[in-house]
Figure 1: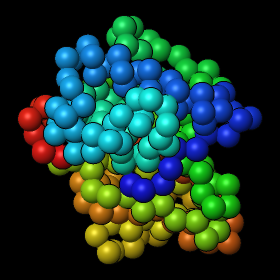
Figure 2: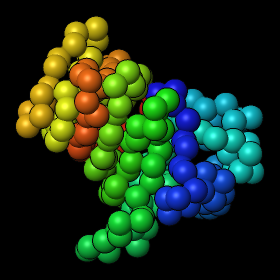
Figure 3: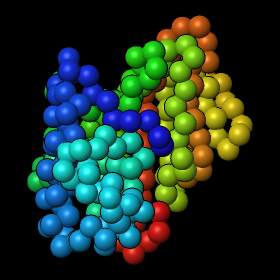
Amino acid sequence: MTEKVNIPTEEMDSAEAVNAAIAERLAALRKDRRLSFDQLSTHSGVSKGMLVQIEQGRANPSIGTLCRIAAGLRVSVAELVAVADSERSPVRIVGPGGCRRLWTGAKDGSGSLLVGSNGPDMLELWAWEMHPGERFEAQAHSAGTQELIHVLEGTLALDVEGTSYVLEAGSSAHARTDRAHAYACAGSRVTRFTMVVFEPGRSLDSDR
């Protein structure tokens, strides 16, 4: 995925504040696992230079980069961006202002991670809003990743390996997203949909 993390000031945190929180969390997790930047780079596929910039709060990482770092640390993205309970409580409640907006489209569409599980398995609940003409390109996730999608409003085009599937409001889909895929607003109205993502954990010595 290539879109940048972009959390508007009117949401719970500014983009700068969220990047600072990610930097602090990354440093804590990396040191807890006694990983050097070189080792984490090998495990995650993210360059050492990028890892240093993120940990210093000087980078605005993409969703894909966060996914790779999380896999390298054997945590979930939700843990990395603080939408999961590190103490593994039986119930975690995320209030209306506690979600993380991790994608902003050219016409102010949004992709927000509402809540997620602890890793290494990742279970995430997302809320998406896409305006006419907006499209989100996603690289293949790790083997076994699946997504459940339900369209609340508008028309969603789900592209998987070059094949497009059109989902009208009220429709749902089960997609295997360990391959290239994309989402787009396919009509003249705003499209809103929810998504559950399951990505099985990977060992530290697995390629991503």
